[in-house]
Image 1 (tube, helix red, strand yellow):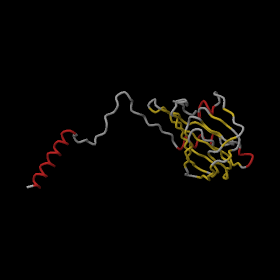
Image 2 (tube, helix red, strand yellow):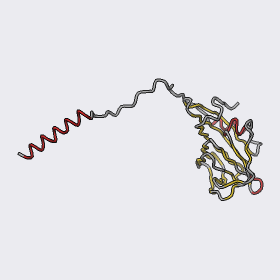
Image 3 (cartoon, helix red, strand yellow):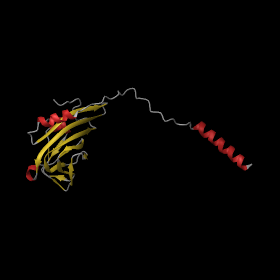
Image 4 (cartoon, one colour):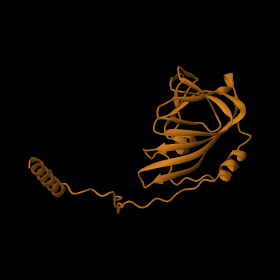
Length: 197
């Protein structure tokens, strides 16, 4: 008799709980009516290769391919960079960007990349410089990085560099390194709608 009474009590409690807390369904949330649906942006391998070939004679080339607004909330830039073989004094100095996260995806070549640490002889790029106006927003350049994290990178590797992180190629061991760079721009400092010519 106690078992039947306990079973009835559990059943009554289950009914009460179901009434107070109806079952949640696993349906997708409705689309927010005030936000437009996004449109995908394509960047072909042929376009990237064409931009690399166009500036093949340059020791360093950093070209924005597209800057896309994502529903007016933030921007994403896509660029392609190639750097010629360097070492020692030819390696130049570091750079950091105050509002952009960069994601490097190496297409070809090998190099030593240093991130973090500190740079001497720091100076801000002028606001009308292409590094600021098109590529990376507010940025600072300096000398070689001291006390940073050193890593060897090559084809297929990906590195994510957060804002305010100095970075520098201390050596490029192959004839050149070519990498795709995705720039995440939460503050919308890059020119949305930009398309490489």
